[in-house]
Length: 253
Image 1: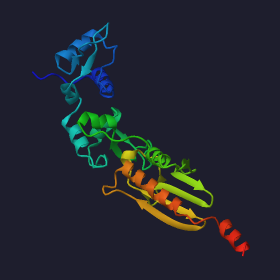
Image 2: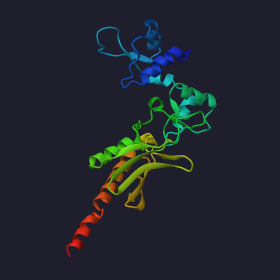
Image 3: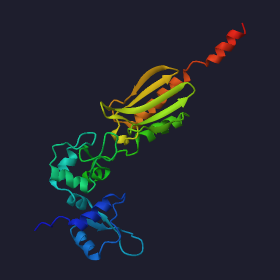
């Protein structure tokens, strides 16, 4: 006889353990429930536990018990960006969303409404055995790369929710963001794993230019940020001397 799948309480405890780096189960689970999950090999006792009640961790069998075939197919069938296809059956998708294995996000990487597309969450990636992704804001990687080169920058947001990384110096302004598409605006605060290239808008004393920085895959935010920082450093180093210097030279003739 095949064991029944985890019940609602058991799933809650097991999903909580999935979110822990060491896969440790919560410490307040009743002994009878622990014994049931241990008998079904969903959890195992941790060797060398600290004094007190033994701690347990989630096993590979336990992770597998959390997934139905439909859920696993939905997670593994996602696009390379992590977006879950719209063809996934509504009950399956709703279950993934309810358990935190997927999340609806806007193009800015913020929690979205029921109309927003669904993406695999960090928890879902871990459960399906997919590689982890960088969840830091893309702006954090770019400002960090600029700081390493001695270039100050800040993150600014407008009333429409668009965000940009901005550097300003005398007579010079550089604004970096990801252009999201017609009618969607711009973003710099989206998660790094949602990145698709930096677009820089350069205003040097009224001379305006664009700078596009994108790696070959179009998804490596760290590489894009380092490249954008180097490009901006070159532009700043190549700027013309201040007009005051040439004026002073002319006055001495």
